[in-house]
Image (cartoon, rainbow, N blue to C red; front, side):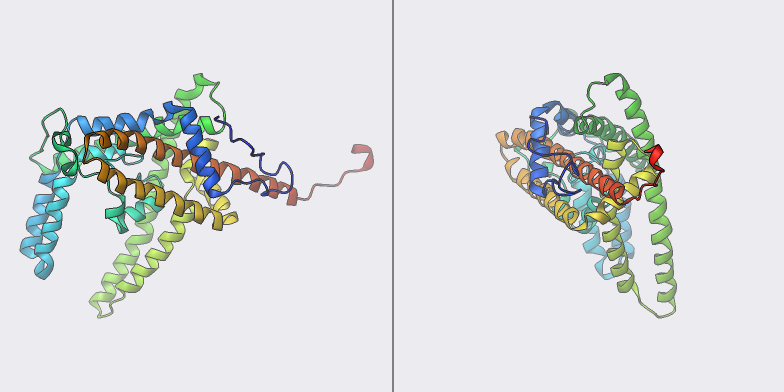
Length: 360
């Protein structure tokens, strides 16, 4: 059941791409693999159980000073901004950041790609997780008393620690999926080393991404501010430019983590592999990304509704773990098939050196 039935390796016959599975077929194959190997959903399921029943950490001491600044210096829209900050501080839990890169009904859409990160900024209502205040009666709180740190720097430190835990959890989550997709489960003694190498590469990717964003965005914002002081308001043009550039960058880097975990390669090569695959399959990649986002964000809205009753909470926890893991698996399958087809296509176009007859 874990094999993708009826699918031949890309390029085996009939051309490099004649046997590539479609978007829906790949998603179905990803879900089938997860159902055949249910242990793949253990990590996101345990994370959600801990986020639900464990310690809840408030970030109120971080948002309250911002609210006061908005009320005192925010001008005409200050009270509205302060009100929004109050809403965020009530629903935000620092511990939810441990699910930053993994499927979670509380953490919302995983920020495991630039595309998901941009969508989370542009459309928070679609990508955020279940609001605990709307859950079934007494099921809203955890088993422990909530912790509300008094100092804002305590909140910042806790957020950094939660983010560090998230980087470890995504490695523990994705390595077994990658091993299942490439059918290398038999060599279990190498799992720990593979996880360690994957974690170091993940940290390198995050640092490179942060550096690239700082290098590209900071000059644009600085230039906009300078021109604004000179009487030229180009904020709208810069925003459109950043949006277009960010959209293209998010598409071409969509499979960076998939390449890193599947092929066990470094950050720069992972970005390069993702770029090559997307460039050769831009149309199908766009369809796959849209289908995945519709399923992921749509399911979050469903979980928000059904968690208002007791059975719905259990269904949401299990359903989100299965669907989220299925989409992650399908993404790896989608990349793997097209990367293999691309390699076959490149090899077929590469001229082979001619040799004398007596060497053939």
